[in-house]
Image 1 (cartoon, helix red, strand yellow):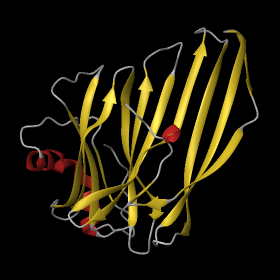
Image 2 (image 1 turned 135 degrees about the vertical axis):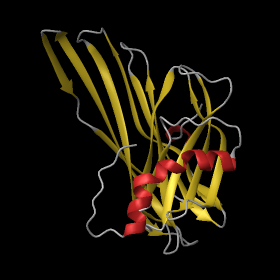
Image 3 (image 1 turned 90 degrees about the horizontal axis):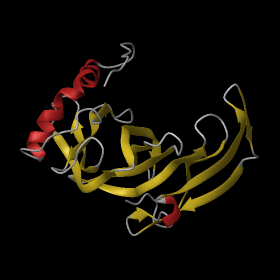
Length: 246
């Protein structure tokens, strides 16, 4: 993973950790899952801007039967000491990522300001799936949020679909495309002290007409909706229609 590093106003230890956190990929894998192969192409790590003494990482571990086109990855999500690379807390998710018609396109870490309580700040892992059909393109972006709970990580938002796109066209111009995006915002604290999560949804349908040489696209008025995810029983409830399933 390539990064542009700014040297101003950043301490030396976090800077060095940020430059080389990828160097710990194999160390973490060997420590937590001896003998397992790591998908280094999609593994991700970064210093946590909320606390630069900590580094967060997500490590996809392909199961033995997996190949480039289809299969299943286990996922190790961890928080480590930025200076030493020592794992502080982690969570192993068996069969977390599946791909066949929808391949794993990318995996990124989300460090937006998810301040759920004054003491608990979450970070996210976003998994992007992409379809392989040219005339029926499809893609999904899925977000999970985690908080540190002792030496473990606790999932507080499980596989919320934050991006969903699909299309059906003739390969030249004519066709219909749909895209839905969801954004999260922090709401007021509930009775248990955890903030509600406000979800803003926007859906757009675009119709293309004409030929390759004279293709015209027309976007219909966007449809918008708002939802609230409440914290209960240690996590936020995600409606079935908004949650990724295998």
